[in-house]
Length: 282
Picture (cartoon, rainbow, N blue to C red):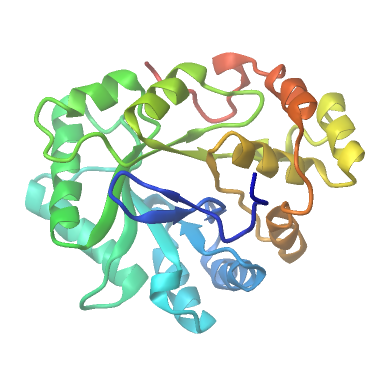
C-alpha cells in the first residue's frame, strides 16, 4: 500500500478530487480566521471548510488570496443553513457566498452543502437542493452535497433531483460516534463521507484507550484521531485557532494505525449516545 501524504485526494462522484485532509473554521472569529487559514495553508492543508452560519467566508477567501497559492490548488467548501422565501433568493444568497470566497466575477466554490435537514421540512430541503443544482450546472459549485443528512433525507431528494446522489455527506464522526448505518449507506451509494468534530472537541484527550494508542506511536491523541478518520477513508475536518495544534493535526503521515489499533478504537463506539453535536436521523 502506498504511503499516505498530505496531498492525498479522494475522487467524488462529480469527477472532482477532494483533498482528504480538511481544515475546519467553525467558530473561528474573523480576527483570527485569516491567520489560522494562512497557518493551515502554510502547513500543507489544501482544503478549507466554512459555512454561511460561521460568518467567516470572506476571511477564508482573503486568506487564500494572501497565501499566494493558485486558487485551483485550494478546495473551498461552504454551506447554506436557512432557506429564504423563494428559490431566487436562495440562489442570490449562495452567490454571495461564492463572491466572498472567490471574488466578484467568474468565481466558484469547490463544494456547496445543505448544512442541515432541519430547515423547515421536505419542501425546503428540495428547494435548497435545486438551488445547489443550479449552481452546479452553472459551474459556481463544482460539487454539491449535504450535511447531517440521514438515509431518509438523502432518499427523499431522489424523487425530483437532477443530481443524485449528493457528492458528499458531512456528519459527526469519531471513534465514539461512528454512525455505522449512514456510513455504510453512503459508501454503498458512492457518497464521500466528511467527518466533522473528528477531535471530539478535545473532550476525549485523556481516554485511556486512546492515549495508549497515542503512546504506542509517540504521537498526540488528536493525531491518532485524525489518522483514524483517514484510515476509515473519511475526510476529517480538524479545527483549531492555535498555530501549533493546526500544524500538529496535519502531521499525521509519519505513522500508521495497524489492525490492532483500529480494533481498539472501533470498540469505543457508543452509537448516537457518543455524539457531542448530533447523530443523524435515519
